[in-house]
Image 1 (cartoon, rainbow, N blue to C red):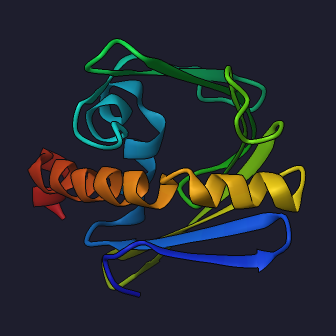
Image 2: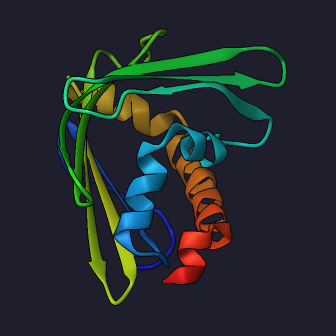
Image 3: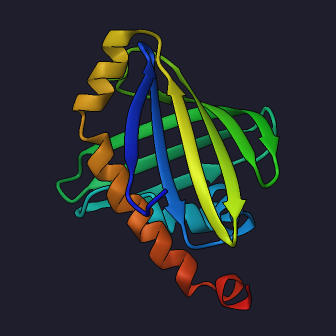
Amino acid sequence: MSNTVKVTTPSDREILIERAFNARRTLVFECMSKPELVKRWLLGPPGWTMPVCEIDFRVGGRYRYVWRRSDGNEMVMNGVYREIVRPERIVHTELFDEDWTGGETVATSILAEERAKTTLSITILYVSKEARDGALRSGMTQGMTISYDRLDELMASLPEARAQ
């Protein structure tokens, strides 16, 4: 697995996103679960910021992300954590305020480590094939690629990464 984002469609309602990181999975997991770290990398394309990143990281806990584009346009996503197994699995729901994905999705993130390198596999289950196809047309792959490259940079700069 390379450090590029690989997107496939394992079923009519699913998208599988895979990306490798040069970091231990404990560090990748922390960067996916701590709001002070998430808001430093999950920004999407240039011109966007994340002024709100609220995370209650426990089963049944909620999260809320607000992204703001330089022109003031906002995108808001909320969800609930359904399953958390440190540092290998996170299952949560996703629902955008402006529901362009056709309803609530369920995202399952699996982190697998081999020789201090972590592969992140995220399966997103949509309510329909049309919703899945709409998400694929939305530019999500480009945004994820930019964000995951930023995550790589963030992890390389953290003291935890240098200690490994």
